[in-house]
Image (cartoon, rainbow, N blue to C red; front, side, top):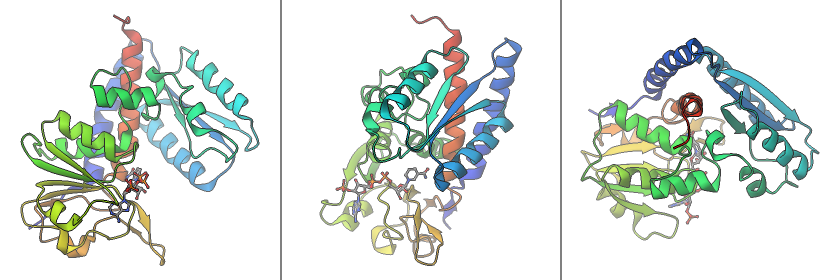
Length: 286
Ligand code: NAP
């Protein structure tokens, strides 16, 4: 029987630890605080902001919403980020993206101080994941995959792992994090040949391609652990992963569902990073 790697239990464990850590910080006179920066009124940004705000407040993290007009200039956005960098009462900054089209994403992202980059979006944060010597935080979705593996006691050491997808947000950092955990890692992508055979050879599979239900029974064998990062909306409006859950459940050993898998852990990771940033801010830089 396939073990279902449910995300909410993982998120709850993370949030319980964050709540206790937030309380400990407050006892020392520090209120963990995050700024959420939004330019415009896009529906998905608004709903993400609402969800993150509610969960942050539940954990004991104060939220400062910063709202700019959709027509705000790049200089304005960068000046906002720089003022948040300089504000010692703030421990993390979440930039809601994509920015309006006239904004250079890289210029604004990289204006953010690495110490406050709780979502791992700056180039410096990503370099830190690759070198293992960064002072920043890993991208939250890639970290969420690791949190699921840890929570369910799945050891990566010595295992053959395949990550399908090579974006800087998910695939590449997830692959580096598996390597750090001593897995033997292959990164596959749209130009990989005979993907089903490649995936079947792995003991651990992370799918992050954004193709609804692409990974069906032809990709899998008994004994595999599969983490599905994909979030796809089908023509009838339902939310599905990259893995064809119904076809694969019953074949593999363990499988994370969509919805209710990686996506439900990501905000917990973000808030955990805010707490860690606040704890680090108390310690003098060596
Ligand atoms: P992305 O930037 O579009 O990258 C997709 C990757 O998948 C690329 O490397 C692409 O290969 C590869 N790919 C696409 N079609 C493929 C195919 N048919 N066979 C093999 N590889 C293929 O997407 P992303 O930002 O990494 O996101 C991936 C998925 O994760 C999306 O569904 C997204 O919604 C989801 N996501 C979930 C969360 C969460 O919290 N759960 C967060 C972020 C993203 P090439 O490089 O060769 O083009």
